[in-house]
Length: 152
View (cartoon, rainbow, N blue to C red):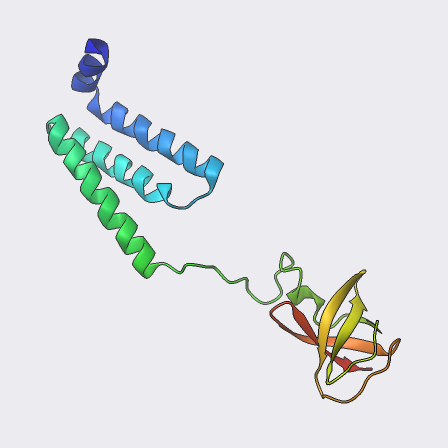
């Protein structure tokens, strides 16, 4: 324990920088998003400790305050979910717009199932008319997990 206290007294900047890197590594592995702010706060604390010779209790207080403030501000002002831009090839549902397929079942009250791009999807008719099983359709939009289709 004396060795750790001695190292902290001699190299406080590198202890805080190492803590920041360790927290960031855990964040990369878990992908939670919560540890980014603690990692950034540890890095900022390393900078403060490197510029001003402050005591361990003061450094811990700086770290705690920075972590709380940065986490609260990030949760308040950063978007909770990033939305994919139009045309994103990783959005496996939106990329179906414009694809053609066939009705698997007859549509009742404008709703039914279609076979598009090798999969069966729930669908709603865009124009609301009747559609028989086997009719050709084209995807014109997406509403949640349901495709909007029209007869072609």
